[in-house]
Length: 223
Ligand SMILES: Nc1ncnc2c1ncn2[C@@H]1O[C@H](COP(=O)(O)OP(=O)(O)OP(=O)(O)O)[C@@H](O)[C@H]1O
Ligand SMILES: [Mg+2]
Image (cartoon, rainbow, N blue to C red; front, side):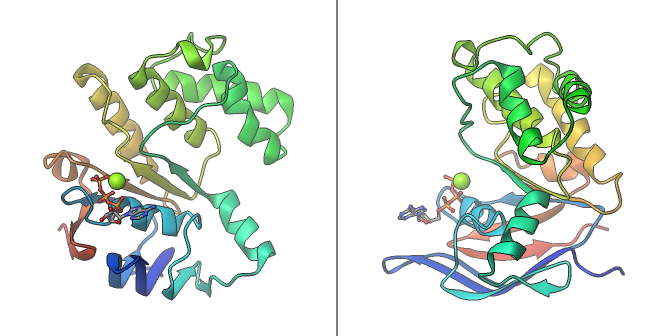
C-alpha cells in the first residue's frame, strides 16, 4: 500500500473539560474517499477543522506528505494551498457567484483566462451553469452550499474536506454531487473526507467510513 497522504497520531482537542476529539491514529491514503459518521457533537467537524489547520489540537501530531506539521508559517501556507474545507454552513462573500469562485484562484495566482474556464467548469459540475452573475445573498441555502462546493473544487485541492455538504441539497441533485465527490478518488493523489448524517452514503460512495462516538473514532475498512 502507498504512503498515507495525511495522518493524525494521538491527537486530542478539548473545550474546557469536554474532550471534543481523541484520535489514536488515523491514516488517509491517496486516491481514497472517507466518510465521517456519528451523532451530533461526536467530533466530526472538530476533526475536519484540525485537518484544515484551522484548529490546533493541544496534543498529538499531524503528518502531511510524510512531514510532521509544525508551527512554521511557510509549511502551513504550503499545506493550506492543497487542503480545502467546505464548512458546515456555507459562508459566501457579498459579491456575485463568479467573484466568490475567483477569489481563491487569485490568491493561488491562477491567470484570468484559466480562472474563467475553471469557474465555468466547476459551476457546471455542481449543476449551476448559469449562476455566475447571481448575487450570493440572493441564493437559497442549497444553492449557496453548491456554490461553496464549486468554490472548493475550482482550487483542485489535494485534500477536499466536506462538512455535511448535502445537508440542504434537494434529493434530485444528490446523485450529481455524489458522482462529483466519487470523481475525487479517480485522481490517484487526492483524498476527500466528508462528514455526513446519511447512513447509506458511505456504501453508495464506496467510501471507507470512520465512525465517531463521543470524540473517539473507529475506522471501518471497506473491501
Ligand atoms: N467552539 C466550541 N466551544 C466549545 N465547545 C465546542 C466548540 N466547538 C465544538 N464544541 C464541542 O465539541 C464537541 C464536538 O463537536 P463537533 O462540532 O466536532 O461535533 P460534530 O460531530 O461535528 O456534530 P454535528 O453532527 O452536530 O455537526 C461537541 O461536544 C461540541 O459541543
Ligand atoms: Mg459538525
